[in-house]
Length: 240
Ligand SMILES: Nc1ncnc2c1ncn2[C@@H]1O[C@H](COP(=O)(O)OP(=O)(O)O)[C@@H](O)[C@H]1O
Ligand SMILES: [Mg+2]
Image (cartoon, rainbow, N blue to C red; front, side, top):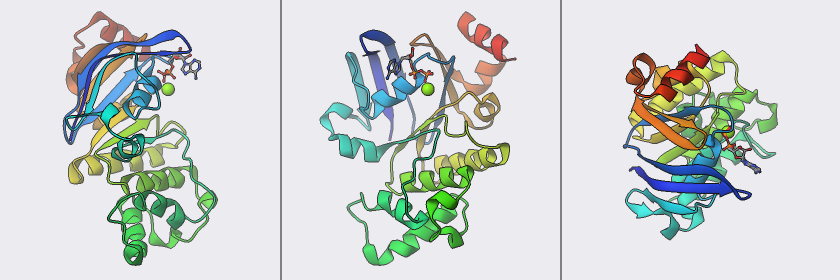
Protein backbone atom coordinates (compact mmCIF):
# COMPACT_ATOMS: atom_id res chain seq x y z
CA UNK A 1 0.00 0.00 0.00
CA UNK A 2 1.90 3.01 -1.18
CA UNK A 3 1.81 6.04 -3.32
CA UNK A 4 4.48 6.88 -5.83
CA UNK A 5 4.52 10.34 -7.35
CA UNK A 6 6.96 10.72 -10.20
CA UNK A 7 7.85 14.11 -11.56
CA UNK A 8 4.36 15.58 -11.73
CA UNK A 9 3.49 19.08 -12.85
CA UNK A 10 0.07 20.70 -12.76
CA UNK A 11 -1.50 24.03 -13.64
CA UNK A 12 -4.64 25.84 -12.57
CA UNK A 13 -6.30 28.26 -15.00
CA UNK A 14 -3.17 28.29 -17.14
CA UNK A 15 -0.79 29.05 -14.27
CA UNK A 16 1.87 26.50 -13.41
CA UNK A 17 1.20 25.56 -9.80
CA UNK A 18 3.13 22.32 -9.23
CA UNK A 19 6.57 21.74 -10.72
CA UNK A 20 8.27 18.36 -11.02
CA UNK A 21 7.09 16.92 -7.72
CA UNK A 22 8.39 13.46 -6.81
CA UNK A 23 8.09 11.43 -3.62
CA UNK A 24 7.06 7.99 -2.43
CA UNK A 25 5.10 7.15 0.68
CA UNK A 26 5.40 3.94 2.66
CA UNK A 27 2.75 1.72 4.13
CA UNK A 28 1.76 2.80 7.61
CA UNK A 29 3.37 6.22 7.33
CA UNK A 30 2.22 9.70 8.24
CA UNK A 31 3.70 12.08 5.69
CA UNK A 32 3.05 15.75 6.46
CA UNK A 33 3.04 18.32 3.69
CA UNK A 34 3.85 21.74 5.03
CA UNK A 35 4.61 25.10 3.46
CA UNK A 36 3.40 28.61 2.97
CA UNK A 37 -0.15 29.47 1.92
CA UNK A 38 -0.68 29.30 -1.80
CA UNK A 39 2.31 26.95 -2.26
CA UNK A 40 0.09 24.32 -3.90
CA UNK A 41 -0.50 21.90 -1.01
CA UNK A 42 -4.22 21.47 -1.68
CA UNK A 43 -3.60 21.26 -5.42
CA UNK A 44 -1.06 18.48 -4.79
CA UNK A 45 -3.53 16.48 -2.69
CA UNK A 46 -6.18 16.97 -5.36
CA UNK A 47 -3.94 15.51 -8.06
CA UNK A 48 -3.76 12.31 -6.01
CA UNK A 49 -7.45 11.53 -6.37
CA UNK A 50 -7.77 13.08 -9.82
CA UNK A 51 -9.76 16.11 -8.76
CA UNK A 52 -6.87 18.05 -10.33
CA UNK A 53 -5.37 16.94 -13.66
CA UNK A 54 -1.62 16.81 -14.16
CA UNK A 55 0.30 18.04 -17.20
CA UNK A 56 3.08 15.50 -16.97
CA UNK A 57 4.46 12.79 -14.73
CA UNK A 58 3.02 9.64 -13.22
CA UNK A 59 1.15 8.68 -10.07
CA UNK A 60 0.96 5.07 -8.89
CA UNK A 61 -1.20 3.75 -6.07
CA UNK A 62 -0.13 0.32 -4.87
CA UNK A 63 1.77 -0.17 -8.11
CA UNK A 64 -1.07 0.78 -10.44
CA UNK A 65 -1.33 4.03 -12.38
CA UNK A 66 -4.20 6.03 -10.91
CA UNK A 67 -5.16 6.92 -14.50
CA UNK A 68 -5.97 3.27 -15.17
CA UNK A 69 -8.40 3.17 -12.24
CA UNK A 70 -11.96 4.47 -12.39
CA UNK A 71 -12.25 7.75 -10.46
CA UNK A 72 -14.78 6.04 -8.15
CA UNK A 73 -12.43 3.21 -7.32
CA UNK A 74 -9.52 5.59 -6.87
CA UNK A 75 -11.49 7.86 -4.51
CA UNK A 76 -12.54 4.88 -2.40
CA UNK A 77 -8.87 3.93 -2.04
CA UNK A 78 -7.47 7.42 -1.60
CA UNK A 79 -10.07 9.28 0.41
CA UNK A 80 -9.94 13.05 0.88
CA UNK A 81 -10.95 14.70 4.14
CA UNK A 82 -11.29 18.49 4.20
CA UNK A 83 -11.01 21.28 6.75
CA UNK A 84 -14.76 21.74 7.10
CA UNK A 85 -16.60 18.49 7.76
CA UNK A 86 -19.13 18.08 4.97
CA UNK A 87 -21.85 15.90 6.45
CA UNK A 88 -25.26 15.79 4.84
CA UNK A 89 -28.58 16.30 6.62
CA UNK A 90 -29.54 13.08 8.32
CA UNK A 91 -28.35 10.99 11.21
CA UNK A 92 -24.80 10.21 12.14
CA UNK A 93 -25.53 6.62 11.14
CA UNK A 94 -26.77 7.66 7.66
CA UNK A 95 -23.56 9.58 7.13
CA UNK A 96 -21.27 6.79 8.28
CA UNK A 97 -23.05 4.11 6.28
CA UNK A 98 -22.90 6.24 3.15
CA UNK A 99 -19.17 5.40 3.04
CA UNK A 100 -19.65 1.76 4.00
CA UNK A 101 -22.26 1.15 1.27
CA UNK A 102 -19.64 1.87 -1.37
CA UNK A 103 -17.93 -1.39 -0.39
CA UNK A 104 -18.84 -4.53 -2.27
CA UNK A 105 -18.90 -6.52 0.98
CA UNK A 106 -21.44 -4.19 2.64
CA UNK A 107 -23.87 -6.28 4.70
CA UNK A 108 -27.17 -4.51 5.36
CA UNK A 109 -28.20 -6.69 8.29
CA UNK A 110 -24.91 -5.97 10.06
CA UNK A 111 -24.96 -2.26 9.27
CA UNK A 112 -25.93 -1.05 12.77
CA UNK A 113 -23.07 -3.03 14.31
CA UNK A 114 -20.68 -1.67 11.72
CA UNK A 115 -21.78 1.93 12.33
CA UNK A 116 -21.26 1.51 16.08
CA UNK A 117 -17.82 -0.03 15.64
CA UNK A 118 -16.79 2.83 13.34
CA UNK A 119 -18.04 5.38 15.85
CA UNK A 120 -16.03 3.65 18.57
CA UNK A 121 -12.99 3.71 16.35
CA UNK A 122 -13.14 7.50 16.11
CA UNK A 123 -13.80 7.81 19.84
CA UNK A 124 -17.48 8.77 19.78
CA UNK A 125 -20.25 7.30 21.95
CA UNK A 126 -22.76 5.03 20.23
CA UNK A 127 -25.62 7.14 21.64
CA UNK A 128 -24.76 9.72 18.96
CA UNK A 129 -25.76 7.28 16.22
CA UNK A 130 -29.32 8.49 15.71
CA UNK A 131 -28.61 12.16 16.34
CA UNK A 132 -28.93 14.55 13.43
CA UNK A 133 -25.42 15.25 12.22
CA UNK A 134 -25.98 19.01 12.31
CA UNK A 135 -26.54 18.87 16.10
CA UNK A 136 -22.95 17.75 16.72
CA UNK A 137 -20.03 20.01 17.53
CA UNK A 138 -17.59 20.70 14.69
CA UNK A 139 -15.01 18.44 16.37
CA UNK A 140 -17.55 15.60 16.57
CA UNK A 141 -18.61 16.21 12.97
CA UNK A 142 -15.00 15.95 11.85
CA UNK A 143 -14.70 12.60 13.62
CA UNK A 144 -17.93 11.41 11.93
CA UNK A 145 -16.53 12.45 8.57
CA UNK A 146 -13.38 10.44 9.32
CA UNK A 147 -15.56 7.47 10.33
CA UNK A 148 -17.40 7.75 7.01
CA UNK A 149 -14.06 7.87 5.19
CA UNK A 150 -12.49 4.87 6.91
CA UNK A 151 -15.70 2.90 6.34
CA UNK A 152 -14.59 2.77 2.70
CA UNK A 153 -11.45 0.91 3.83
CA UNK A 154 -9.06 3.21 1.99
CA UNK A 155 -5.35 2.54 1.84
CA UNK A 156 -4.55 6.26 1.82
CA UNK A 157 -6.11 9.19 3.63
CA UNK A 158 -5.60 12.61 2.06
CA UNK A 159 -6.16 15.12 4.86
CA UNK A 160 -6.29 18.81 3.98
CA UNK A 161 -5.99 20.96 7.10
CA UNK A 162 -8.48 18.74 8.91
CA UNK A 163 -7.77 20.22 12.34
CA UNK A 164 -7.66 23.88 11.28
CA UNK A 165 -11.17 24.69 12.47
CA UNK A 166 -10.96 22.60 15.66
CA UNK A 167 -10.23 23.49 19.27
CA UNK A 168 -7.07 22.05 20.88
CA UNK A 169 -8.91 19.17 22.55
CA UNK A 170 -10.61 18.06 19.32
CA UNK A 171 -7.27 18.40 17.55
CA UNK A 172 -5.76 16.06 20.13
CA UNK A 173 -8.55 13.53 19.48
CA UNK A 174 -7.82 13.64 15.75
CA UNK A 175 -4.09 13.38 16.41
CA UNK A 176 -4.59 10.18 18.41
CA UNK A 177 -7.04 8.85 15.87
CA UNK A 178 -4.59 9.32 12.98
CA UNK A 179 -1.89 7.51 14.97
CA UNK A 180 -4.29 4.64 15.65
CA UNK A 181 -5.23 4.37 11.95
CA UNK A 182 -1.58 4.27 11.02
CA UNK A 183 -0.75 1.57 13.56
CA UNK A 184 -3.85 -0.61 13.50
CA UNK A 185 -5.07 -0.23 9.92
CA UNK A 186 -1.60 0.26 8.42
CA UNK A 187 -2.94 3.30 6.63
CA UNK A 188 -0.79 5.76 4.78
CA UNK A 189 -1.77 9.28 5.75
CA UNK A 190 -0.89 12.44 3.85
CA UNK A 191 -1.58 15.38 6.07
CA UNK A 192 -1.47 19.01 5.00
CA UNK A 193 -1.29 21.21 8.06
CA UNK A 194 0.02 24.51 9.43
CA UNK A 195 0.08 23.08 12.96
CA UNK A 196 3.77 22.38 13.60
CA UNK A 197 3.09 20.88 17.05
CA UNK A 198 0.83 18.36 15.37
CA UNK A 199 3.51 17.65 12.75
CA UNK A 200 6.11 17.03 15.42
CA UNK A 201 3.77 14.74 17.34
CA UNK A 202 2.66 12.48 14.52
CA UNK A 203 4.70 12.80 11.33
CA UNK A 204 7.18 10.19 10.20
CA UNK A 205 8.41 12.41 7.40
CA UNK A 206 7.86 15.97 6.30
CA UNK A 207 7.71 17.39 2.78
CA UNK A 208 8.19 21.14 2.45
CA UNK A 209 6.37 22.70 -0.48
CA UNK A 210 7.39 26.21 -1.50
CA UNK A 211 6.07 27.91 -4.64
CA UNK A 212 4.94 24.62 -6.15
CA UNK A 213 8.26 22.85 -5.58
CA UNK A 214 8.91 20.11 -3.08
CA UNK A 215 12.14 21.56 -1.77
CA UNK A 216 12.90 19.16 1.07
CA UNK A 217 11.73 15.74 2.22
CA UNK A 218 13.17 14.71 5.58
CA UNK A 219 12.47 12.55 8.61
CA UNK A 220 10.50 14.73 11.03
CA UNK A 221 13.22 15.04 13.67
CA UNK A 222 15.87 15.82 11.09
CA UNK A 223 13.70 18.51 9.58
CA UNK A 224 13.02 20.33 12.83
CA UNK A 225 16.52 19.89 14.31
CA UNK A 226 18.69 20.16 11.28
CA UNK A 227 16.94 20.99 7.99
CA UNK A 228 19.01 20.08 4.96
CA UNK A 229 18.11 23.05 2.80
CA UNK A 230 18.31 26.80 3.03
CA UNK A 231 14.58 27.01 2.25
CA UNK A 232 13.91 24.58 5.10
CA UNK A 233 15.90 26.76 7.51
CA UNK A 234 14.10 29.87 6.26
CA UNK A 235 10.72 28.26 6.70
CA UNK A 236 11.50 27.25 10.27
CA UNK A 237 12.80 30.71 11.10
CA UNK A 238 9.53 32.28 9.94
CA UNK A 239 7.40 30.10 12.20
CA UNK A 240 9.65 30.15 15.30
N1 LIG B 1 -9.76 27.25 -8.29
C1 LIG B 1 -8.72 28.08 -8.40
N2 LIG B 1 -8.79 29.20 -9.13
C2 LIG B 1 -7.73 30.04 -9.26
N3 LIG B 1 -6.56 29.84 -8.67
C3 LIG B 1 -6.41 28.77 -7.91
C4 LIG B 1 -7.48 27.83 -7.73
N4 LIG B 1 -7.05 26.84 -6.92
C5 LIG B 1 -5.77 27.17 -6.61
N5 LIG B 1 -5.40 28.30 -7.21
C6 LIG B 1 -4.07 28.92 -7.10
O1 LIG B 1 -3.11 27.89 -7.04
C7 LIG B 1 -2.10 28.19 -6.06
C8 LIG B 1 -2.01 27.06 -5.08
O2 LIG B 1 -3.22 26.95 -4.33
P1 LIG B 1 -3.44 25.87 -3.24
O3 LIG B 1 -3.10 24.53 -3.78
O4 LIG B 1 -4.83 26.05 -2.72
O5 LIG B 1 -2.35 26.29 -2.14
P2 LIG B 1 -2.24 25.88 -0.61
O6 LIG B 1 -3.19 24.77 -0.33
O7 LIG B 1 -0.80 25.51 -0.42
O8 LIG B 1 -2.56 27.12 0.18
C9 LIG B 1 -2.49 29.51 -5.46
O9 LIG B 1 -1.70 30.50 -6.07
C10 LIG B 1 -3.94 29.70 -5.80
O10 LIG B 1 -4.22 31.05 -5.95
MG1 LIG C 1 -4.80 24.60 0.94
